[in-house]
Amino acid sequence: MEQSKLWTKEFIINALINFFVAVNFYLLMVVISDYAMKEFGSAPSEAGFAASIFIIGALVVRLFAGKLLVRLGYKETLALGVITGLVMTLLYFAVNNIYLLLLVRFWHGASFGITTTAAATIVADIVPRKRSGEGIAYFSLSQILATAIGPFLGMFISRHGSYSMMFAVCAAASAAGLLLAPFLSLLKKELTAGQRQEMRGLKLSNLVELPVIPISVISLIIFMCYSSIVSFLAVYAQEINLVEAAGFFFIIYALVVLVARPIVGRLFDARGENKIMYPAIFIFAAGMLLFSRSYTGYELLLAAVLAGIGFGAIQSSTLAIAVKITPSHRLGLANSTYYMFSDVGMGTGPLLAGLIIPYAGYRGMYTIAAAILLACLFLYYLLHGRTGGRRGTVLLAEVTKRGQSPR
Image (cartoon, rainbow, N blue to C red; front, side, top):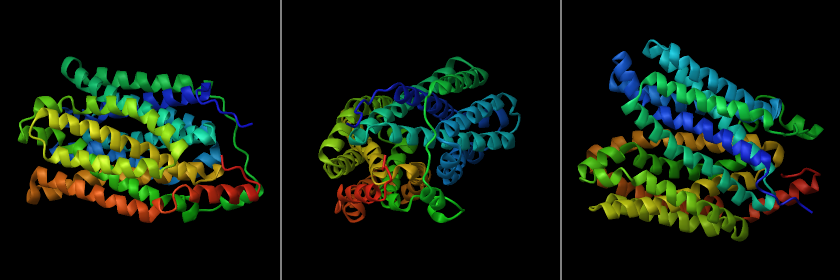
């Protein structure tokens, strides 16, 4: 009988490592531009690049992270990412010019890309197959908690402490993750001769997991729309005179996700992805439309609730779909492919929104984003929804016939 236990020691340790790494990322992300301008007199464009080059580093390394997971092993790759992340965090203390800061930020982003891809692959491999949606939903809460705690610590220390104190807190978070890593007990996956041959060489199919691309395209568009909220909330709130309510937006969002995501995970496993994705996309689109038409604080915070339900469900479900349709020996490639597309969405969203705002205004830009989300209902149907869970069932039958375990 298949082991159905979810909260194993490995699951908890892996989630904690992911949490500490994410706290480091989100803490620095909210203050690094200000740091570059105040410490080095950088122009806003340079300071913004200091923030975004982190994502570039993560995106570049994800292209090779899947292959690295196969070569080194899951635990070893995770340890490499955590160690590199700690080293890069300590190097912030030695930065004395903007160019060195950009270099450190790039490699810090690369370490983040390795660690998060490895952590996601580990959880996809160790959770019971019939509870993959629930397991990934619970695991992803470590990231959600970090999105609330990291920025809060960053803003608090920036007001009451120093940049050195900020780097010390980040180093402590990285060190905590590193101290936990040795307690992670994972056997190195042994591939069959056919699997080793399949993974050999530098070719497209060994850098990205091609069957995961359709659902990753959906993720890219969803993340692109979500990033417009993250990037322009403060400015938009000033324009519509709802600054005080906007200060609670992501707190409400995080609380809703914490409550809703485990429920979504269980429904994913019990009812299938289509029962989650169609309502979630519609709810997120409704939340974005309400966001674009908010005139009171209550409307803005209700939009946060809808965004938490919709985007939170989409984020965990699209990753669970990517895992569901991938054989076990290619999980690293599936995760790296998924995260690459998500990173592109988060990175290009603010740029595209910035191009639209001068012509449509903030309300018009968010209305357009809501329309794009509604269009995703049809796009999801074309790329995945019309086959639903059958694609994963077919894959399961195929790999079982070949004598390979899909999990």
